[in-house]
Image (cartoon, rainbow, N blue to C red; front, side):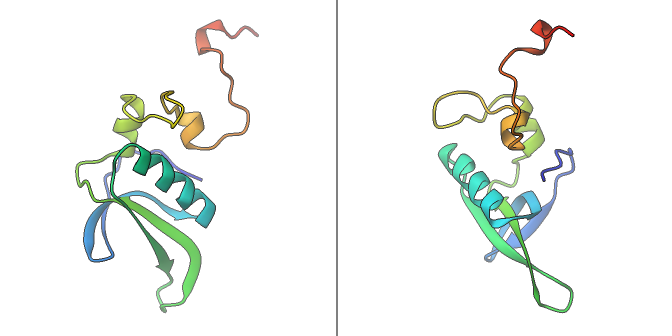
Amino acid sequence: MASLKGKHNIAEIEGLRCTVVESGCTESRAQFLKGLLEFNRYDVRIDAEKAKDGSPTGTFLVGVTDILFNPVVVLYQKRLFRPDGEVITPAFWNQWENQDLKPYWQVTR
């Protein structure tokens, strides 16, 4: 699952320098992120990760060609949108099942 940390990683994917959005993700997660980021007009690159010996690990590396892109900053500044026009929240980004639609200040115990 995604770990939203502020570290800014850069890797070469398909011969282009890319900002790493997420590494070690499944193929379905990679396609989910690709769909969201392409909807928001980013050029997305996906590459299969390999072990040190060169064998495939079954995980993927997702990156965007915008070197200044930082997923934490863009997400919390509310600059990413879903296809239905709503702002992407951290819960939606992480694909958490139980997303409360109530704002946190309206939740009572």
